[in-house]
Image (cartoon, rainbow, N blue to C red; front, side):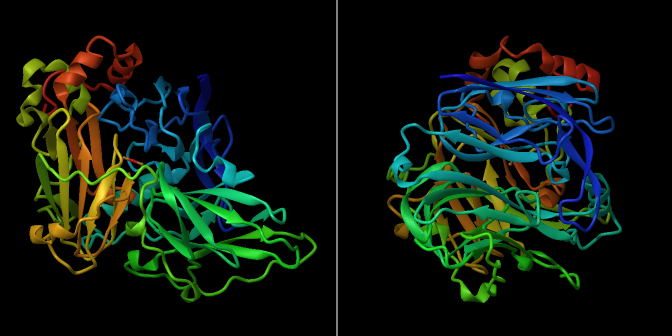
Length: 507
Ligand code: C2O
């Protein structure tokens, strides 16, 4: 195994990726788009971050990585670290034993839609699919806003927006651009690693004239499964094999199309699509894509993990989360789990674990607004999430891939335990899953990874509204692993940010 090291100096640069507006974006080493992080299973990854933004603190999260034994490298601010203040540095240092398609992004104040988001690819010399393709290509899709997140967020959670209407993106990007020709060699097979790095919109993705064969979702290998069109929520990933045609007679469009059901109001003139081309012959025209109605969306619930991991039949702890969006008395709209909206604690939750001894197993010390859930070592946990809201939400759990054991249609209401007889025997696993409007999902995982792991909606607007719970998994094991082993930059950053590092998160 190797050590791969990245030196990332984060600063504002200017970019105009949709050709409609130049705006400040968060770049790395003076450039944007930011570089991918690429490693091989078993490697150590070291990312030295310097915050040269000048006006905002930051952090990085490595979405989908389990961070086994290194929860302090997970990145969410006020959960496992303090913000990296302006002018300060912080080193992320961890090993990766999981192959697949991931991404990295800021986990501070809804910041990644300002551009601090990039692919994270872990190669696998033992991949069951490695003989099935000749070449791999990473494709990121995302919605794009012309405004800065700091401004948009201030308007979003304010009394001027009592309905909680989310800002609607101005356009959609593929590989952070509007125009992406990919030259294709006849007869070759390509692995496309696709990532939705957007803030809000799910993307329908299709390749005209070609079938996608899904082989991986969110870092989990699947039984190869064909799809015409994929529905990829914010933060989800799909790897698909595409076999090129044997002739160069024509070029073909591929499209990412934003799911406009998410938008309260669709502005006139919004183009929900971004189009790229499989170019077999660059002297030929690139044809206009077909309408979305020509394609049938694939249901990810039908996927089977390649390892055929069986359903966890026996559940030790059920966590019921009833979510809704509503006003508090200040007139602004918030999001709630069981009537509590998440508020950042005064002490990062990990540091509360590390500084409270045997009290770390008492949920009360984590504060009344962190939606804290204590998990015991190696128990099987079931999350039942009932969506009492007419919107779609992509839920993500840090530190684990979960089995998706049930997912209702929309308007099904709360989960009915008597339906439990029909659970799939080898459920798909992933780290981000959609719950439908006024529907429910049931997820299971084994608490075999001590750490502080957020569970949240990956729509950045809803992170700001407080749609977050905190899993505190085996806190005494976290103490055993990490007490005395936290690098000093953790404490230096807290000191520079004036954040206390000990005692009750409740403050
Ligand atoms: Cu993409 Cu909390 O993460």
